[in-house]
Length: 294
Ligand code: 13P
Ligand code: SF4
Image (tube, rainbow, N blue to C red):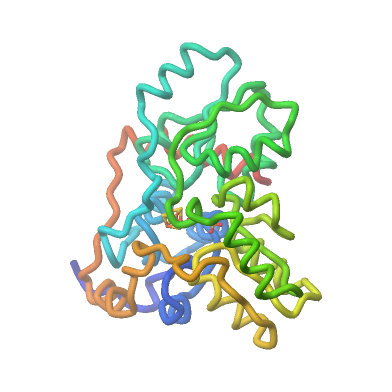
C-alpha cells in the first residue's frame, strides 16, 4: 500500500486505546460518536484506532472510503458470541421479535440483525421498536440494563460478555467505596447488574466522561477500561479518579500503539474489507440505528 498523506486521513480513536494514541487522533469518542464521525467525514481515508468491529462498522457505513486498521488482530472478545443458528431458532420460535445486536459484534452478526445499538443509544432505540419481544445479543449485561428501563418489552438475552467489564464485583465496589467514601461510582453497562445497581451513573464511555465533568464530586471511582482516565484527567485535571479494579484493561485496545499508527501512515496498516452480501445486510441494520437514534 502507498503511504497515506496526513491531510487525506481522519484518525479516529476510542477512549480505551493508549493515551498517546488518543492524543494523536483527530477525534476520540465512544462507539456511537465514532460511527457518526466516520459517516460525516469528507476525507478519503479513515485510520481507525480501535478493535476490528469498529473499523468494520466504519467501512460498512462508508464503503467509498478506505478504512485502515493499524493493528489487524485487535479484536473485541464478545464480537462473535452468537450464532446464526441461535438467531434463526429465535426468529422461528418467538413471534413479534426484533433481533437487537450490540455494535460490539462481527459484520456477520450485524447482517442477521434488525437493528444495531451502542451503549449510549440502546434504551432509546429499543423503546422505538414496534416489536414487543426483543432478542438482545451478544451482551446480557447491557441487555439487562436496557430491559430494566423498558418494562413494556419482553427480553431474551444472548450469552456473550465482555471479560474486562464482567469481572467487576460487588466486593470491589464495597472496597472502593470504603477506600474513597466521598467518591461517586461511574460504571459502564457491560458490568454485571449487581455492580450497575450500586452506581451513581451507568453509561457509555462518553456518558461517563460527561457525567464526571458535570459532577460536583471531586473524587470519582471509574468502572470502565483504564484508557478512559486519559480523557477524564485531561478534562478534569483537579479531580481524582480511581479505577474500580486495578486490571480494568482491554488488552486488544492496548495493541494500538503510536508505532502502529505510524506504520499505518507508512502504508503498512490493514485495509478493512467486508464481503458485499454481508456488508449489505449489516449496513441496513446500522442505518436503522442511525435513523432511530435521531
Ligand atoms: P462505548 O460505546 O461506551 O465507547 O463502549 C465500547 C466498548 O467496547 C465498551 O467496552
Ligand atoms: Fe470488547 Fe470488552 Fe474490549 Fe470493550 S473492553 S472492546 S467490550 S473486550
